[in-house]
Length: 206
Image 1 (spheres, rainbow, N blue to C red):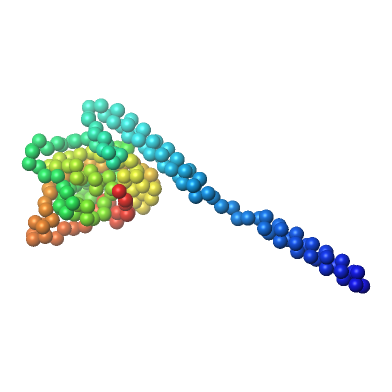
Image 2 (cartoon, rainbow, N blue to C red; image 1 turned 30 degrees about the horizontal axis):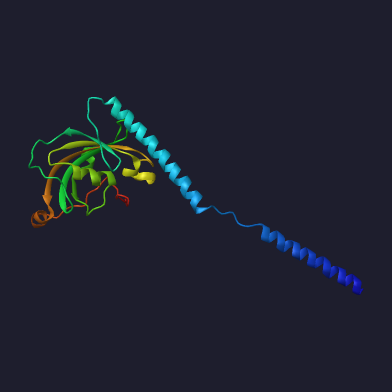
């Protein structure tokens, strides 16, 4: 009887040891953070390159226009260019009054100028689309400019949750009606929140 008990204990111990070893061998799967980041960067580069090739095709087909490359990674052309040397350009703290229209790269209207009116923007102190935030500061009062924005200068991966899809490049035409110093506006009127679309603009980074 003692021998039987001893053998049973040895057998049970062997099973327990085997079970522990098996559990230790099954380690959870994990991704290397370095590998994940490299893959993410590669995907983003491929996405941007694809969007830029589409934009280049548009500029080539519009050979009558002269497009200017921005250091921020978008392109633009003047529909109306001011010849006045005195025209001021919006800077931080100014109030910009403008109208604009949003299209996709095929020229299909996403948001009309009429439905987006009026636009009053406290420059660099209110949150609007990154491309527009930079582009408006390149304009003078009375100018009309068409911008070609890759998706990372627009609504990025998320879109606007309404009409603009994820990773969608945009063709945006802006007419800068007026520019006033914030101090001047405060004495006569209260600046309204600019709206990139009828919805709240998503957070963007420069």
